[in-house]
Length: 71
Image: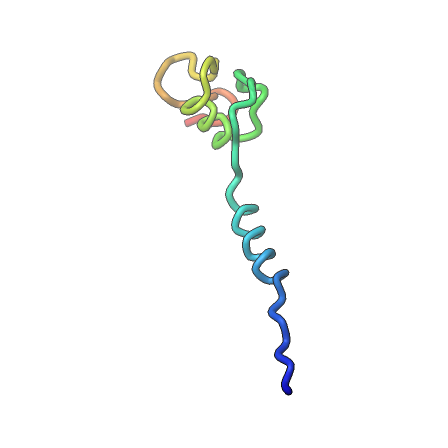
């Protein structure tokens, strides 16, 4: 009788983890101001997806121009 080695599950786990770690995920958590953001990507997500944000004073669709997403 020959015993076959089991495949390690840690390899697939580390691959899954590395994929999710490369792309930040944001969620609407009540923050509304640019000073509460950490990046332009985060501010843009909040502006596009979360109600009641105050990050686009000139209403041009660009979040936090003076702090994170300046031209």
